[in-house]
Amino acid sequence: MSNDAAGAKLCSVDFEIFGHVQGVCFRMYTEKEGLRLGLCGWVKNTNKGTVVGQVQGPADMICEMKVWLSKEGSPSCRITRASFSNERSIDKVELFGFKTRF
Image (cartoon, rainbow, N blue to C red):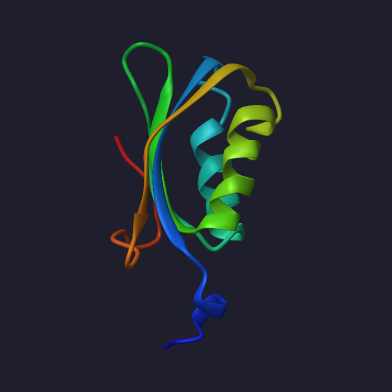
């Protein structure tokens, strides 16, 4: 039994953030917050004005990230709704680093 993160449960979750979240550095801040929490993932703008992405890592850090995505975001954004889907346990992180996709 490995003791990385004290055997913390790993999970993966997809997100979509609604509101005024484009053109306000939302992706850059999401990347920074993900890295700060030790998560892997990606984030990108959609053509319908939302921001989507996926985060993977320890379940407790994923919880913190979900709160951040729902309530905080970048300084000048206005989040109206955060939607989370496909939440699942994973054996190991499938992504590397935290990237902005285009």
